[in-house]
Structures are given as C-alpha cells and as structure tokens.
Length: 157
Image 1 (cartoon, rainbow, N blue to C red):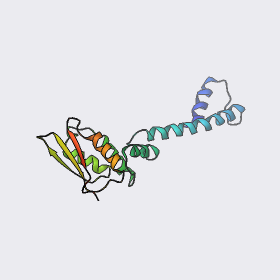
Image 2 (tube, rainbow, N blue to C red):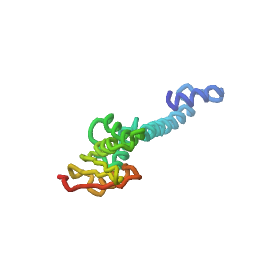
Image 3 (tube, rainbow, N blue to C red):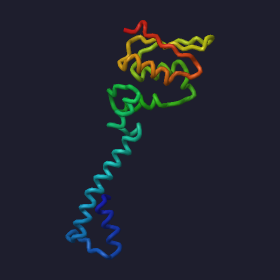
Image 4 (cartoon, rainbow, N blue to C red):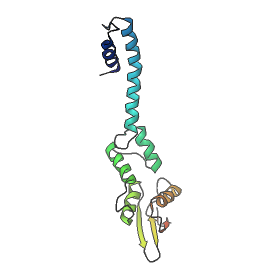
C-alpha cells in the first residue's frame, strides 16, 4: 500500500473528507504521496546499503574501499569477501586465517611463525596492487597484537 492509499484510508475513517478521487483533498493527498513515496524509496535504498548482506551499490563500494579491495566480480562474492574480513571466529588469530584475510584483500603472501621468538613474518610473493604502505597497514591491523610482525617484500615481483 502506497502513501496515498494509506492516508486516504485513515482520513476516510474520520468522516470529515469526501475522498472520491475528484476533490481538492484528493489532489493534495496525491501530491503529498508523491514526495512521501520518493522518500520511502530512498530510505529503503539507504537501509539496503547500510548492511553488507543487502548492499549492492555505494554501501558495498565504500566498505571495499575501506579495506583496500578493488570491488570486482559478482555481488554475492564481493559481499562474502567483506563478511570474511569482518568475521571473528575461534580461529581468527591463526596463521592460516591471517593468510586468508590477506588473500581476500588481493595479496599473495607466505606466512611463517617463529614461536620461540614470538614473531610472524609475512612474505609477499607479489607486490600488492594497493601499494606497500597499505599492505603493511593491513598486515598490522589484522595480525595478533601479542606477536612481533615483520613484512618481507624482498621476493615480490
């Protein structure tokens, strides 16, 4: 039910208006309804773009941009990548999980751990499209805080 039908239904119940489609009150309601329906459509769009699961336009693009993603591929795959980046599970701090996060961001890496010294080395196999600075920031953002993280671009092509 649109805004016009909704307003007409409520106003008709009062018995104050003759709403037969030809009165001045009908014309006013139709004018109001045009604006209200347009706003309702905009709000629906805003709500859809506010959540990863339902976004497909600017909401998805803004989130991808924040993570340094390129935003190519099917919408469902793009949403899945963003959800993986934001997911926290019981394995969220494993070497494999860090590797998957970086892969989802388009980075080809090899990760090694040195438990005795408390270090993790992220070796880049290819130079990341986002640039070295953004790649280092991404690694530091997702790496375990209790370990020293080193980045190695020496073999990157």
